Length: 161
Image 1 (cartoon, rainbow, N blue to C red):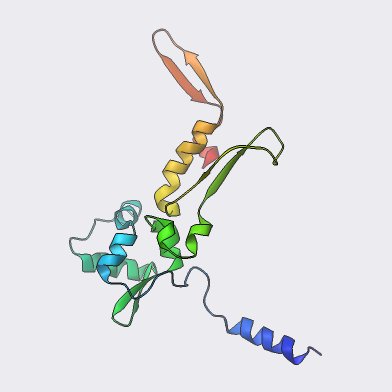
Image 2: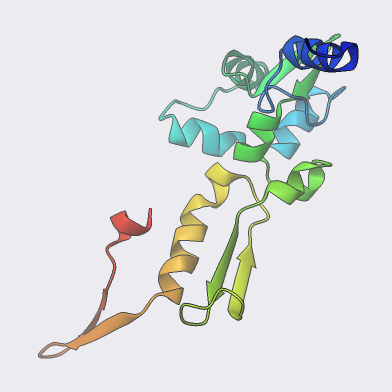
């Protein structure tokens, strides 16, 4: 039979109904501040939706998607929204620690590193730049044609994605 302390711990754990993604990054924000912190243009581009002409349309769509939630007449950005579309992760208190980090190691030894890159933007915003940085780090062949040189990657981009 479990101890009372263990039973309480299980009860507390089971009552935790929110996931990390639904947690709140910053709250008590005006709509204009939400748009200042998030790259709303990137969201609409990725979703292939026309960008609303009014701020209210942008906020309504972000609310529908769970990127933003209404909170006492103001707005709050969810961790999900901040991690994907945050212009600068350092603007969100605890989320800067969850930035993407790529480390180039020497040979097969993970102890010695050559260089590293830590992202500063949300995952959706920084994804293309991250792929470009990784591709630059990888070896490539240079094929010399009749008149021009062409660089071909050893690893196809689809494999890097």
